[in-house]
Length: 174
Image (cartoon, rainbow, N blue to C red; front, top):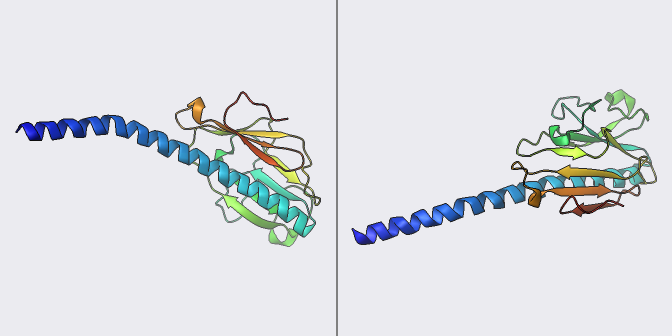
């Protein structure tokens, strides 16, 4: 009986300390996956702009998984998903196949997040055929579900299209 009680006590201690550590690990990995997926989309958009010699747009979308996804016209929360497309007609909107626009990547809604916010209230990033962005510097903040600032990640995108990850909000994107 004593051996059983000792075993149960040790098991309770392991669960008490192990579960919070595991949830921290899972939350950190979730943020890393979201950041890596976003940076992959940015890299793809820049390289496709250079390769195709057309403007490529990455935009926030409220319906990324629809048959014909469109860019959102307002809002800053990118956790709803995004799309990247070659914008052959130059209107910065994903059009029908007849417009010549080519859908390059779709990222569906991210439900396990504390929010993905852009520093300015624009819903698009546009890469010129030269690979440079048409807008200036952009910062995207990836928050964990628990809003723990230790897991906050910022992605800086320079006008050249170069991305950089910052692990806290005290560094600046310049």
